[in-house]
Length: 81
Image (cartoon, rainbow, N blue to C red; front, side, top):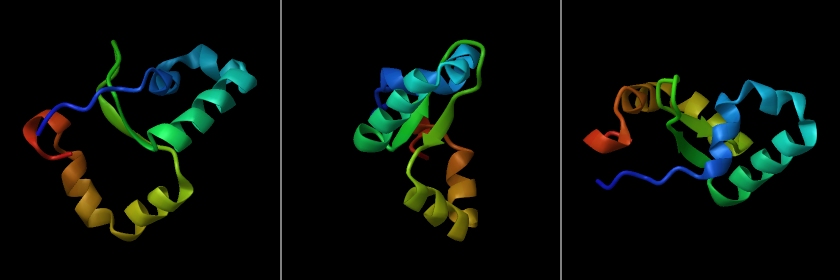
């Protein structure tokens, strides 16, 4: 499996100052929902994580928690994500 490219807008999740600039935050989230609703986020000083930005996707994950919990233990590099 190839490593996904991270949408630069996803860095907003790891930027504490982004939460103080609501227009910037909302613009980044709108962009992600439209273009990369499931984003791999890998930034310095944070453990890599998946960011899920669409409500329907979040609900699917909640409904099938065991499946997604097992996948979350893997990174895109090892074929698990």
